[in-house]
Amino acid sequence: MAFHRWHASSGSYAPLGYVRGVAVDLTRLILAFHILSTVICAFAFDQRPFWELELLFTTSSFWEGRIWTVLTDPFYHNIAEEHVWLALNLFLFYQFGTEIERLIGRVSYGFLYVALMLVPALVCLMLAPLVGELGVRVPYVFTLAHFAIFVGFAYVYPDVPFFFGLSARWLAWILIGVFTLAIVASGAWQALIPYAAGLGTVYLYLRFVGAGRDLGMWEVWKSWRAQRHESEVLKRQATHRKQKEEVQASVDSILEKIHQHGLHSLTPKERAYLEQQGTKLRDREAKERR
Image 1 (spheres, helix red, strand yellow):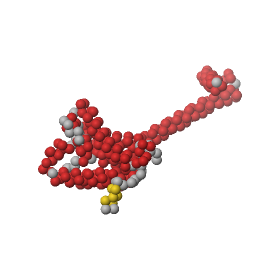
Image 2 (cartoon, rainbow, N blue to C red):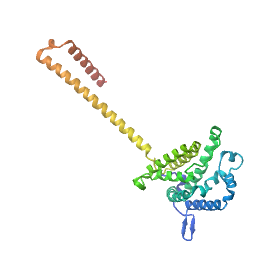
Image 3 (cartoon, rainbow, N blue to C red):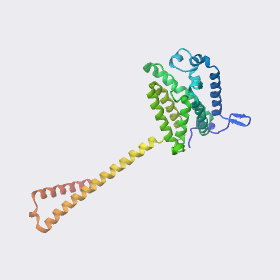
Image 4 (cartoon, rainbow, N blue to C red):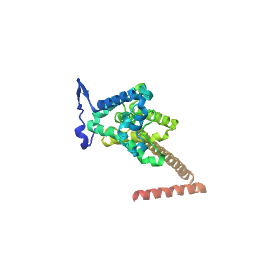
């Protein structure tokens, strides 16, 4: 698998360090920050309005001067709302984030995680004058960066099997579709903006660094188009061949009539048809000589 030179030195999977014999990579370090922030937010529940104001990103809070919310928003977790989904979210991030980090390297993976925090926020800032106030929180998805990491895993390893025989590519498409419908049904259609920005970021970034391949839908569509084109060509060829055989049979019938009864036995319609086919044959031979 080819990688660009600018991050080739980061392609090795060397841990940042060890804690009591346990290797600590960038994914584990980010995970530790998420767990720590969850604990802090849980014990500071009484001050939740303050934390949400100071840590959650919205376009209005950004322009009011709280620019740090671009980086702090992904690390804010309200366990009273997220419940067990938070644990599942972090577990899946650990599983799939580790694989992506091993593939593209620590430095490139770090840039990817930062991009997943910055790009949706920047897109929201650009579109807010058109659609109103926006935030990067996506209903039902919770931490957008972590779901995007899973989609990135499916992009890189599309054929990895999951439950019920589903491959990673189809599971990713199913979840993308389910979350999209859930967002629309909730009425928070504005959340589709950061949602699309996050998924687009992981796709374009991994494509840029040369990792993985398309999720499959594009190949399926191209394959379908190629098969359809081939089928149409074969159908046209079969129709043309059948028409040619019918013409040849009609001409042979007229020639046989001439052979048995003479040219004077032909009807005006048969004479016209024979002359027409003769003209077409001469034109075709003239084109071939050119």
